[in-house]
Length: 177
Image (cartoon, rainbow, N blue to C red; front, top):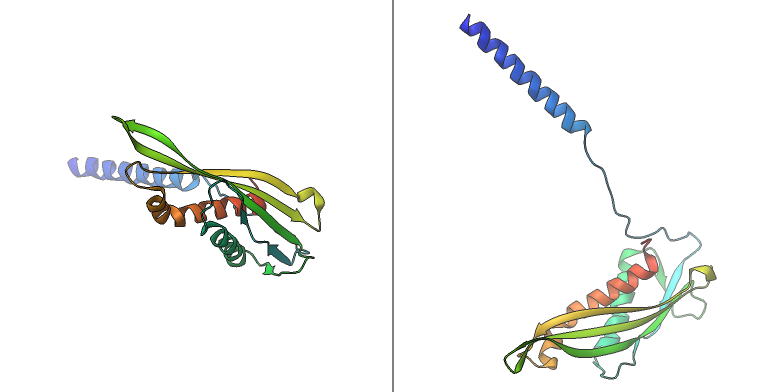
Protein backbone atom coordinates (compact mmCIF):
# COMPACT_ATOMS: atom_id res chain seq x y z
CA UNK A 1 0.00 0.00 0.00
CA UNK A 2 2.85 2.39 0.88
CA UNK A 3 4.66 1.60 -2.39
CA UNK A 4 1.50 2.21 -4.36
CA UNK A 5 1.09 5.63 -2.68
CA UNK A 6 4.73 6.44 -3.54
CA UNK A 7 4.11 5.46 -7.17
CA UNK A 8 1.04 7.71 -7.28
CA UNK A 9 3.03 10.62 -5.78
CA UNK A 10 5.82 10.09 -8.35
CA UNK A 11 3.29 10.08 -11.17
CA UNK A 12 1.75 13.31 -9.82
CA UNK A 13 5.20 14.94 -9.59
CA UNK A 14 6.09 13.84 -13.15
CA UNK A 15 2.72 15.06 -14.42
CA UNK A 16 3.15 18.43 -12.66
CA UNK A 17 6.66 18.77 -14.13
CA UNK A 18 5.40 17.92 -17.61
CA UNK A 19 2.63 20.50 -17.33
CA UNK A 20 5.07 23.16 -16.11
CA UNK A 21 7.57 22.40 -18.87
CA UNK A 22 4.91 22.54 -21.57
CA UNK A 23 3.45 25.72 -20.07
CA UNK A 24 6.80 27.53 -20.05
CA UNK A 25 7.64 26.15 -23.48
CA UNK A 26 4.60 27.85 -25.02
CA UNK A 27 4.52 30.90 -22.77
CA UNK A 28 7.66 32.55 -24.11
CA UNK A 29 7.89 36.22 -24.82
CA UNK A 30 9.39 36.99 -28.16
CA UNK A 31 10.72 40.43 -28.97
CA UNK A 32 13.34 41.96 -31.15
CA UNK A 33 14.92 45.31 -31.86
CA UNK A 34 15.41 46.49 -35.36
CA UNK A 35 18.35 48.78 -35.24
CA UNK A 36 18.58 49.70 -38.89
CA UNK A 37 15.80 50.25 -41.33
CA UNK A 38 16.21 48.58 -44.69
CA UNK A 39 18.23 50.63 -47.10
CA UNK A 40 16.34 50.85 -50.40
CA UNK A 41 17.99 48.77 -53.14
CA UNK A 42 18.45 51.82 -55.39
CA UNK A 43 20.76 53.40 -52.80
CA UNK A 44 24.28 52.33 -53.70
CA UNK A 45 26.74 54.78 -52.19
CA UNK A 46 27.37 57.48 -49.62
CA UNK A 47 29.67 60.41 -49.06
CA UNK A 48 30.81 61.75 -45.72
CA UNK A 49 32.05 65.31 -46.10
CA UNK A 50 34.69 66.53 -43.67
CA UNK A 51 32.89 67.12 -40.36
CA UNK A 52 34.19 70.53 -39.28
CA UNK A 53 34.63 71.85 -35.76
CA UNK A 54 32.85 75.20 -35.40
CA UNK A 55 32.62 75.16 -31.61
CA UNK A 56 34.07 78.00 -29.57
CA UNK A 57 36.70 75.66 -28.13
CA UNK A 58 38.24 73.43 -30.81
CA UNK A 59 39.50 69.96 -30.00
CA UNK A 60 41.80 69.53 -33.02
CA UNK A 61 41.56 65.71 -32.97
CA UNK A 62 37.77 65.53 -32.93
CA UNK A 63 36.83 66.50 -36.50
CA UNK A 64 39.12 64.07 -38.35
CA UNK A 65 38.27 61.26 -35.92
CA UNK A 66 34.51 61.83 -36.28
CA UNK A 67 34.79 61.95 -40.07
CA UNK A 68 36.81 58.74 -40.28
CA UNK A 69 34.78 57.01 -37.57
CA UNK A 70 31.50 57.68 -39.38
CA UNK A 71 32.90 56.44 -42.69
CA UNK A 72 34.10 53.22 -41.07
CA UNK A 73 30.80 52.68 -39.22
CA UNK A 74 28.82 52.96 -42.47
CA UNK A 75 31.26 50.75 -44.41
CA UNK A 76 31.28 48.08 -41.69
CA UNK A 77 27.53 47.97 -41.01
CA UNK A 78 25.88 48.60 -44.38
CA UNK A 79 26.29 47.43 -47.95
CA UNK A 80 26.87 50.99 -49.18
CA UNK A 81 30.09 51.98 -50.94
CA UNK A 82 31.94 55.15 -50.13
CA UNK A 83 32.34 57.74 -52.87
CA UNK A 84 33.73 61.26 -53.06
CA UNK A 85 31.51 62.28 -55.96
CA UNK A 86 28.97 65.07 -55.71
CA UNK A 87 26.24 62.70 -56.89
CA UNK A 88 26.31 60.34 -53.87
CA UNK A 89 22.96 58.78 -52.99
CA UNK A 90 23.45 59.65 -49.31
CA UNK A 91 25.38 62.88 -48.65
CA UNK A 92 26.36 63.44 -45.03
CA UNK A 93 27.80 66.63 -43.61
CA UNK A 94 27.76 68.57 -40.39
CA UNK A 95 29.89 70.19 -37.76
CA UNK A 96 30.74 70.17 -34.08
CA UNK A 97 28.59 73.02 -32.80
CA UNK A 98 29.28 72.84 -29.06
CA UNK A 99 32.24 71.83 -26.97
CA UNK A 100 32.23 73.16 -23.44
CA UNK A 101 32.83 72.19 -19.81
CA UNK A 102 30.51 72.87 -16.92
CA UNK A 103 30.80 72.09 -13.22
CA UNK A 104 28.36 69.43 -12.00
CA UNK A 105 29.46 69.06 -8.38
CA UNK A 106 31.36 71.08 -5.81
CA UNK A 107 33.23 69.86 -2.74
CA UNK A 108 34.32 72.65 -0.46
CA UNK A 109 35.52 75.49 -2.66
CA UNK A 110 36.59 73.25 -5.56
CA UNK A 111 34.83 71.53 -8.42
CA UNK A 112 34.72 67.80 -7.74
CA UNK A 113 32.97 66.87 -10.95
CA UNK A 114 32.83 68.36 -14.44
CA UNK A 115 30.81 67.66 -17.54
CA UNK A 116 32.06 68.00 -21.10
CA UNK A 117 29.18 68.61 -23.50
CA UNK A 118 29.69 67.94 -27.20
CA UNK A 119 27.07 69.10 -29.69
CA UNK A 120 26.90 68.16 -33.34
CA UNK A 121 24.79 69.60 -36.15
CA UNK A 122 23.92 66.88 -38.72
CA UNK A 123 22.88 67.54 -42.30
CA UNK A 124 21.83 64.41 -44.21
CA UNK A 125 20.71 64.56 -47.84
CA UNK A 126 19.06 61.62 -49.53
CA UNK A 127 19.46 62.58 -53.18
CA UNK A 128 17.01 59.88 -54.29
CA UNK A 129 14.20 60.80 -51.88
CA UNK A 130 14.19 64.39 -50.61
CA UNK A 131 11.49 63.55 -48.01
CA UNK A 132 14.12 61.55 -46.10
CA UNK A 133 16.46 64.53 -45.66
CA UNK A 134 17.43 65.29 -42.06
CA UNK A 135 18.86 68.36 -40.38
CA UNK A 136 19.12 67.99 -36.61
CA UNK A 137 21.25 68.66 -33.57
CA UNK A 138 22.80 65.97 -31.39
CA UNK A 139 24.26 66.55 -27.95
CA UNK A 140 26.09 64.18 -25.61
CA UNK A 141 27.62 64.79 -22.19
CA UNK A 142 30.66 63.14 -20.66
CA UNK A 143 31.42 63.45 -16.95
CA UNK A 144 34.92 63.55 -15.54
CA UNK A 145 36.68 64.20 -12.23
CA UNK A 146 37.00 67.85 -11.29
CA UNK A 147 40.59 67.32 -10.18
CA UNK A 148 41.88 66.74 -13.72
CA UNK A 149 42.36 69.25 -16.50
CA UNK A 150 40.31 69.36 -19.69
CA UNK A 151 43.27 68.08 -21.74
CA UNK A 152 43.64 65.11 -19.36
CA UNK A 153 39.91 64.43 -19.58
CA UNK A 154 40.02 64.64 -23.38
CA UNK A 155 42.80 62.06 -23.44
CA UNK A 156 40.67 59.56 -21.53
CA UNK A 157 37.26 60.47 -22.98
CA UNK A 158 38.17 60.97 -26.64
CA UNK A 159 37.36 57.41 -27.78
CA UNK A 160 34.01 57.49 -25.97
CA UNK A 161 33.17 60.89 -27.43
CA UNK A 162 33.90 59.75 -30.99
CA UNK A 163 32.08 56.43 -30.58
CA UNK A 164 28.97 57.99 -29.01
CA UNK A 165 28.65 60.84 -31.50
CA UNK A 166 29.28 58.51 -34.48
CA UNK A 167 26.69 56.04 -33.17
CA UNK A 168 24.17 58.83 -32.68
CA UNK A 169 24.72 60.18 -36.21
CA UNK A 170 24.46 56.66 -37.65
CA UNK A 171 21.23 55.99 -35.75
CA UNK A 172 19.67 59.26 -36.90
CA UNK A 173 20.38 58.35 -40.52
CA UNK A 174 19.84 54.61 -40.66
CA UNK A 175 17.55 53.65 -37.77
CA UNK A 176 13.83 53.33 -37.70
CA UNK A 177 13.43 54.80 -34.20
